[in-house]
Every structure is written in structure tokens, then in C-alpha cells.
Length: 86
Image: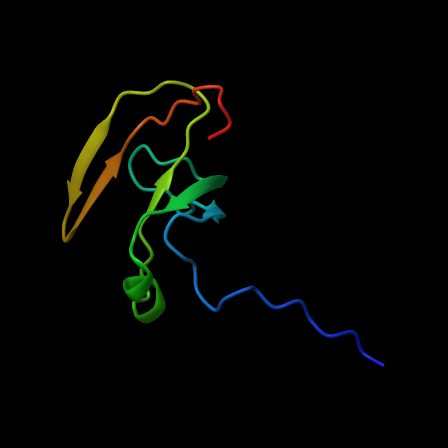
């Protein structure tokens, strides 16, 4: 008997969840490899749109960057761990 495949708890990424995202092909200063990313687009967009908006995490400090690349705006922020686990 074949073991049932594990299904995600819901069919699309939800606001506030963290996913491993493969940032490749890279654009500009993006890192072209697997990185954690926080979902910041709302659940309605995530369910019906093919583009999910995420915020990347950095392990080291970096300069804030906002770049207009045609029809999309790329914005990055440094998120620091405050040591509280929150």
C-alpha cells in the first residue's frame, strides 16, 4: 500500500509565514541561493495571484536598498534579532 503524500496545512503561503525561497536567477544585489523569506503579501493576493511578496532575511548587516526595475519595486530591510525569540 502506498503511503499518502504529506499535504501542506493550506494550499498557498499565508501572511506572516516563513518559507525557504530559492532566489535564482538573481537580480541586482540579490543572493542567488536558498534563503528564509517572510511572506508579507496578504492572504487574498497569495491565494489568487501568481506572485507572492516576501521579505528576505540577512545574517549580516547591509545597507537598505530600494530599486525600481521596470514594473516592480524591490525593497529590502535589515531585520535584527533582538534576542527575545519573538
